[in-house]
Image (cartoon, rainbow, N blue to C red; front, side, top):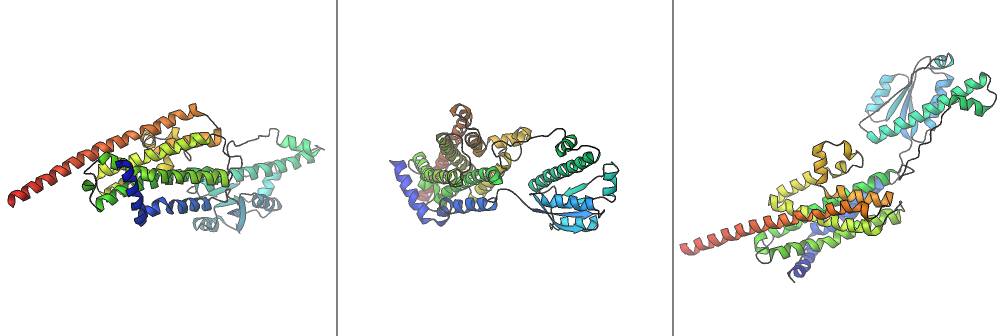
Length: 394
């Protein structure tokens, strides 16, 4: 009965407090739509690059046309020297510069191997990866065409025969689970859970801060403290789960991204994820016992979540400290279940380990309750002592 009463009271509090209402109603939707809008294109195309043509020959111009024809790159500027091109790249006017050396056509016709140099900004990791792969493809295609023409001039009468001599072995590379290399499926599906974790932990802390700043935390916890804490958390649990279901529905139903697994496993993982994050939020608050300090702990704890999830950097290559931190983040275990269901279509057995780990985060709630009762008893004893001293003075 106390839990049910606490849930109803908290729902009224959410409706009255604009910050709590924002955290559970419109702010998650805005953040999700913003992330999706950023990566909605899915594939980066026509990245601006510059060409430094020092040869000014027919073959160098043909190579420039090959670069411009690549779907990932667009030759937006041509330079006469590398210094001007470097300045343009530092100013972010172009993402890369390709230097075609002097005597390029002459060296090719003499059978030598002229060196074409590509410079790109390594700080833009994804852009650099795209440009590097695109340039390898351009150079391979162009070299094959040059070699095929040379073979035909040497006596190969059939174009396919000349091409076969130029490229004796062909490789077919097929990406699995994201066949069109869509960055939305790759990044948004991981960014959203990491943001969701931050919102859940931060909202849990702010909900407890609201009681401390209102009637006073210890007055609120004077009677049936554990039931009131559980009721407060449950009032938000359903709202958080609705958020998680909505982003799954948008990505895998509305946007029709591939989904090969079981919705039931994914929903159970989301429920456990919500409880795990609320448990960690409660623990953080009752360790800090001050709003600024608690929110600082929340930021330090949840901010590295996306980096430690193992999506953009393999978890196996992380140092031991990063692996420990990753293990303490509920979203790291949830994202494994999500990947298993969305991409691999695995069953309950494969997801059982991560589900058990998410369940074990409930221990943090038990520790938080222990700290809460300890602080409560000390506070009530102090209040009782002060009241006794006041009566004696009276």
